[in-house]
Amino acid sequence: RELKVDLGERSYPIYIGEGLLQETGVMFLKHGIGTKSPVLLVTDETAGELYLRKVEDALAKSGYRTGSFIVKAGERSKSLSVLEDAVTAALEAGLDRHSAVVALGGGVVGDLAGFVAATYMRGIKFVQIPTTILAHDSSVGGKVAVNHPLAKNIIGAFHQPEFVLYDTATLKTLPEREVRAGLSEVIKHGLIWNAEFVDWCEIHAEKLLSLDPESLEYALYEGCRVKSIVVSQDERENGLRAILNLGHTIGHALEAVAGYGELLHGEAIAIGMVGSARLAAKLGHPEEIHAVTKRIFMKYGLPTSIPSHLDTEAILGAMMHDKKFVEGTMVFIIPTAIGTVEINKNVSTALVREIVEELK
Ligand code: NAD
Ligand code: ZN
Image 1 (cartoon, rainbow, N blue to C red):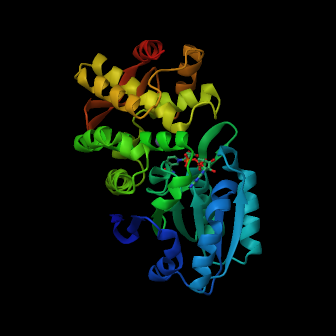
Image 2 (tube, rainbow, N blue to C red; image 1 turned 180 degrees about the vertical axis):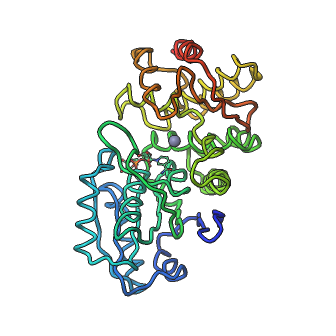
């Protein structure tokens, strides 16, 4: 399947299908990336062990020289010190202005490699080869960043890739928990934009969880499609793009309070989306939204309540440090029906406290 992210002159395609890794070199040529300049492949130990050779071979076959930079798996690799090491690797590999950086891995590698590409010599070409389900989200939209010890994704840029190459065969090696968590973000794209797709996800839960190729390809296609529509309309997050944060205000706070690792991002936002649906009911929107949201996440074996040992005040505190906190009221993405959301800038902290308590 092929899909276009429509950003005028900077539009780019997303290719989704089984076995695409082998086509990496051919795709590079097709997209006009010159063979004279070396390419830097950025990956983590896990994805690298599984797929780096394949990508290197495919690029070599088309006449590209490559260097590689392999980071430890996990969020900690999105740091300034790892960025510096990546630049060292880029310099040692001889990257120049016409070179490309490739992200081969999940969102961590995508965000890090993208930031390397955005900043090396003030910006060079970037290609995304996502290998997790969650990365259907992170590989589209051009947000790239590393973390600061005090805040996630705070040092970043907008840097769109030349193209996204999504080989669904790579997803077969994902741990089951990562599969569920990644699908949480796929379902989010349905909840904000496409009610029919939410139904489809509910019906196809077993197929998706067992990574049935056809269902998976369609789900990733639809997730990427929604993301790309939203991003096309608001590349720099001036308004609409905020709807992609459904479930994230609560979700980010839970991740922070639980300590990164206890809850995966997709798990935290599943709880957050159930919370937003409860908020919706309190704000007068149909009760059904909450019932459907909770039911679907339960079907996917995702958590729908806040682990009881997490402290309510700590969670609220974490939300208030959130960029989205504005003077006593909070900005929340609220579902107004399945498949539609609104940006509500006026949700009182008191109401949020009530929801957090109820979610336990
Ligand atoms: P991740 O990159 O850490 O990958 C999850 C785990 O799966 C890692 O341990 C990784 O080594 C492993 N893995 C990757 N591919 C594999 C494969 N094919 N088989 C087996 N194991 C594999 O995490 P993620 O969930 O993909 O992404 C999370 C990151 O994405 C966060 O840092 C988040 O901030 C970022 N993100 C960015 C955006 C954006 O718009 N830029 C959007 C959403 C999330
Ligand atoms: Zn997310």
